[in-house]
Image (cartoon, rainbow, N blue to C red; front, side):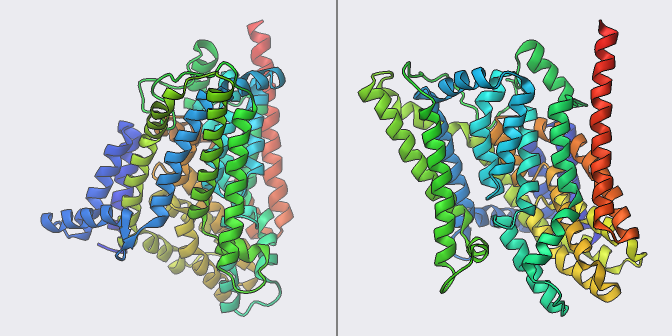
Length: 524
């Protein structure tokens, strides 16, 4: 069953069930079971052995603790506790009141989230969770739905990381590019310069970021997003309380009467400084001798850095709490236990989904779903002008099916380089850029993507509500990117493809603003 069309059954089943039932854990469980059945060739006893092995591998791998996964879980728990104590210390309330005086429109609140998503480009996990913590009080006060905040976070985190050389993504991609260029004897440019030349070719990134600005400025609310926004504006219902919401405190916690903006800013600043500092430290420790900033980020231990940053943020948060309780007497110290428990509990829905998603991604990897999809590209015999758009679409399908853009990079980038080298070496950079763009697109659409899950968590949005509301915008961005890649493929001009992408985005913005004016006139 491995590396065949049957390997597509588990991810397709899980995704269809998510859409039809809106029950993400049940859907992921069905995908896990289907994967195990195929791997065991329908031997029931062997099926359960494979499921157990996948579940155990999340926590223990090759006889050692799987620190990558465990560190992410630990960071999420710490972030939940930090959130709870920021609320108890009065930081969230004070920051919301401060922001209300300065951010006075829904558009402004959405732009705050978008700008933060763009400037916090070090890592997508950190981006998703940190931006949510900072922007959520502002968007809540302006009655922006949590689903829209999750969309803004998700559509700025991975897209910015994939074009930033100084990020965990950029370092990983540059290392891959270097290997590919060396393998095919390309010496005209270094891995870094090749990466920088590919940045303007990543049409989905610019389409996705453009759509975020159009949604904010043009109030371009379509499909399920319009329903969520209407409820937020008219009823003050930011999310459906009957659905599980990761990152949302279940019980009302006491709030200090003397809290200030510093009670929010200080912990978040400590979190950012601690994480970035730890990334620089772990990266430099892994490189011998003098290391460039790119080498440091290429070798950094992201999850370990998140835990170090989380610990520093937690210590500062608790320090601010005890200042409120002992010095300012704004809150009682007896809420410490409740704050820790409620903060940790708030992250459990996200952790459950992540664990199930990790299991299905592992089993899909064993089924070689990505390898099968990559083989389709490698054996295709199409006009070379169609290569960028074909690679974009295949990378999108692969990332959507497997829930991992990084895995898609690792499989498809070398194949894209091989195809370009054997047909037209001048197409190697457009081909590689198309893979990067397609993988981010597929990752955006996939309900089993960890980045999508963490964007829901950061925003405090129901996960499936986020997936369903983001999908139309991701598809629009993909359609724009497809047109750009067709132009690039047939003209060989990056500038022409990018100009078309920007032109379409501008046309959509003009159309949305014109439609709003016409609607307002009719209502008057």
